Length: 388
Length: 131
Ligand SMILES: [Zn+2]
Image (tube, rainbow over all chains, first blue to last red; front, side):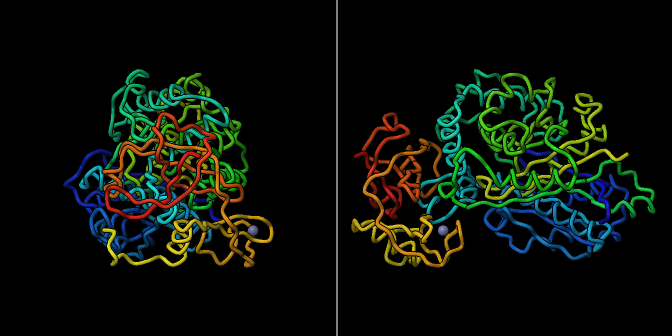
């Protein structure tokens, strides 16, 4: 099996770019990634592109060849769609192609354009990640789904809104120095608690913002990096994916996300590590409760224990396990189809030392990314390691 | 997206909703006692293709719920509303809780199930009423 390295990373600034087209956003990220990698475009053998709602937001289907063209590529291009986990899956498939020897260089990433729609239209678009018949037609929204999980969690394990507010405060604090983040500002627990309700028990500051943006990664084989003298110190040593019933009510537990547990076990096994070896994590906090569920599904906390992690200062920047040093989806922003790629971008920067928050984890060698789709009917986990 | 006769039916789902509206609600069960909702060709839990219709109990209990303030366009005139997941034993349903103030809904509340229509567009949906 061929080893896989992250040779280059690229992001657009996440935020409100309502007039910028998807093709322009993705091209910016892709060109950054290829420049960062020092890999000529003719060497790219495939584009794995993640996107969720482009057919609704831009009335544009068949986006992969369009995005390849925008990035100056003539290689085969394929779009991956698993709601908010789209780019995570695109990256995972890139890793698998390189490992198998099928390819030496793959560009993977994603793009979402969202703010050109009204908030109401975006709410409707995001809801299609849920079961149309038995959830969406019954009034389930994306925040509503996580609110159902949050209340189920409180009922099963305890915890309250203030615990969740600490997750938001932590992630906002982490985003201050991240030049790509949508909200580079701190918030207080009081602000979070007093924000308007969206879907109770979740309020506005429990939710990630609506974001436009793109992410891109150049993955290469170890052999390619060696022959071409590419500086790529970060290796992808584990990848895993899990699926679950699409409708939340069909799952055994409403406050657990076993698809992510399966993905994590697969990724840890490949990497030859366990949860105790993880030194830094970027997890899918589309809502504050989602970070709690993520930490438990990754085995970093026992079920019922992660709710107080931020409040106790364990996952803050000065804690024993810093989580979402990028600012997370909460403060960095969540361009749905780009998010899974951006997590790998941020973790790579953290590990190789060129992230504004790298000095928080100067000695970290092992990190994980956790990318989830819908109410975690899809989950993708990657383990990244600084190579010897 | 209006509720007129031109709306295409979703076989299985709309038949199930018709039955629920007529007071003949059901779910699907395999020989291993796993519940699921139609349309189904196999049990999502064990893969059995021996599925039969079983009467939905008259009453279930709210397992979790949310008060939705920010609604999609198709629910905008219905907001705020309460969406709940209700446990009926072998199967759970998601629907909107009506005839009770949102602050009076609690986990464990016993509810019956029916089909109602939305204020926003007259489309049908699963409705729960406290019993
Ligand atoms: Zn079964």
